[in-house]
Length: 270
Length: 310
Image (tube, rainbow over all chains, first blue to last red; front, side):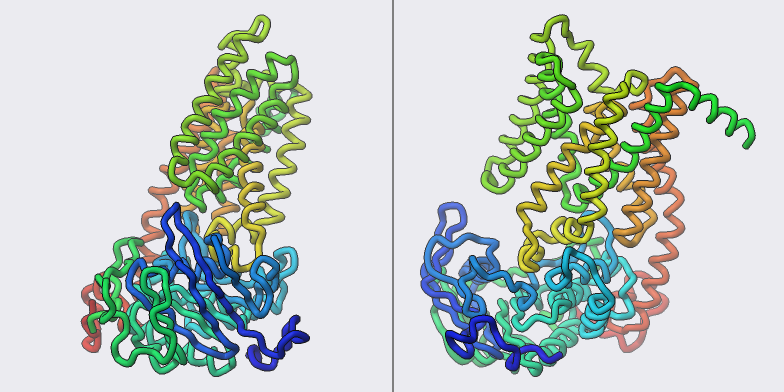
């Protein structure tokens, strides 16, 4: 894994190291309700930034404007120094959406799901030997190599999250964007995820992640951005041993996997 | 065996049976091949909606004396694109818009066919429930061309369609043209509906898109296996239904659909021991990695080190 600081960017003529993510005055609406009211957010190369805030503060919407799932009503977004509309180099971005399950309506194996993450590097959707190798490596990173041929339906909630992260890692990205990667994850998987993330950060990967609480990822985080009602409330060092539990409007609702009514250890109370 | 062979040859002596069997096989391949993506994206009933819209195409074909198959293809493609656009833009009242599209399509079909000179609802019946024995030479040509398109899309773009149907939001970040692929899926489904229209009929098309996939899921753990098994089931039931309707005087469309549901029930029963064995194997694996909820599956294997968590 030699991604990160030593990879040249296509816009290196302008600035040697433009921020990997740059949001300036971003506003967005869902329906007619303003959710983001002018957000500035920068993630520099190699930085780990946590996006914190109460439910409904606009954390997930902010993430989803960055990937283009939610349209902007104002402001600018740049990825690796390129305006998002013209950004095509998606293989450099790994995305972990907020999900409680990796399964769809049809059975799929762990390998099949993770292979989707490699499509950004595969020409015309043809997976070559190197691509299969990368998929296997991504599964090793999250400790699921032995479950490669199993159906995702047979996995626990925490393992689903590990599959989603392996899928994001399959393209060997320089930037990881994660929306609540620790939600509904058992303690064992939380530790695996934290270790995986530590390795990625050590290799130079930049990370933007939405978190509900700092939890086991706290030592990794360089900077925290706290949102409230669609505005940036705080941008600086992470609030120590505080997380968002002390933030106003926190009502402690967690998404839970519904698949097969399996009991899931979230590790939230232990 | 020998009698079977003799029967098959006898069937193939009739040109209309040759056409019917060819059309049936093509439907058996294409309907599950598209249906699997619809089931995966949890739009299992999209095929049913397109079937309703296609009725307007059949009616227009009669009214303008054009080929009902090609006209139904054109109209159902337009309908499928409209449905996809409604899904993008009209999230709030999307279901109402879809209902209007469905029933408007059905009403349009009835209206146009009755406006056509000498046309009546009786003409529509063969399109609603299928009429294999009246499949003409030009119908077969149309079905072959359309089926080739469907197979090309569903197999050639399987990885892209899988990614988009599994997780649209993630697919966008891999740089896939998500909207174009969604449109392509809808168009391919529309084309499949018209391929299957002459065989099982517009009202029963959706069954052949969804039930073989549901049946295959009883056995399979992977997407690739689900795809292969559902196409195999599709081909078996369409051939089986066609041959049955030749020897017994029964409608082929209904026979095919009932056979498909029979296959589903058979596989569900057959898969129960398989599922139990897999669950046991999974529980053993889980028990080895302490910390997983193995204790719920097999209380006897609870390890003393197992921590209690919430």
